Image 1 (cartoon, one colour):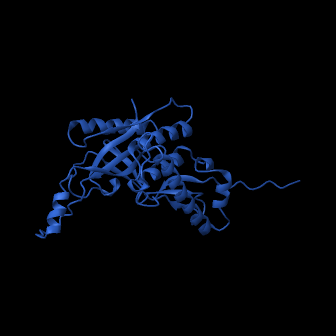
Image 2 (cartoon, helix red, strand yellow):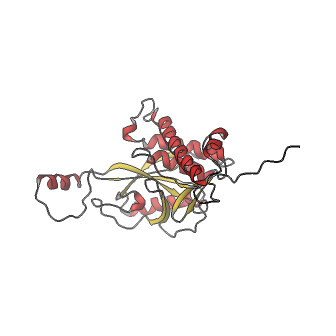
Image 3 (cartoon, one colour):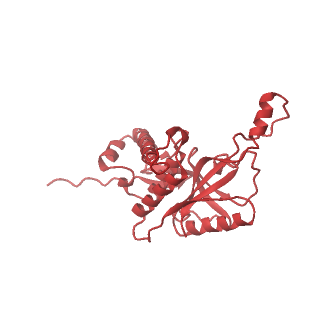
Length: 268
């Protein structure tokens, strides 16, 4: 009679010490912080984080069983390194799928990241796959102005989605250059940077607003949300209604950008 094989703990995603950690979380070295693999994969990394959080314990949420078995080993440090490479490959795979039809029938170049509309389509598929039993929710891109009375309504709408257990993606950005408040410099380069700091805001980054129940955290409070920022892998709360200069660097929760330019959320 064959002895039963021990059941390995599932690979999960969890907010630990203000970081989004992915792994088996049983021994040191088994888990890694989920961060974007290059400067263009912030959107793909947010999608990967959403999928892992919405399907806890599901190894197939990332890839097939064979690949998971290749990712793990009896040595925790080696397991973490293999898992990091696997997460990186999966980010690039998500990005390739999105960019094949980044603008409908038109492909989108990797050097420019991914379009908000492609990210919205992928979020719709992820929620449909990983949150079965729910009414189908279609994610759409809503361009917003993050100042004035309408922004308070937008923030309330974001929090309502999060309270219902679904994530929301925020598109952040700013002018072509940011004013870092250095001392006055009369050089041509300084004057050019100053001019670029006053150009209209352009989309530069994606971050993921997280349902607090899914990450086992408390409601961060009125106007605040927990945000996963993929370049650092951090998970921190941010009050979205705090005034921010549109020309200066923004909070680290928004990737250092001062503006929220679009919300990718389920349509009402």
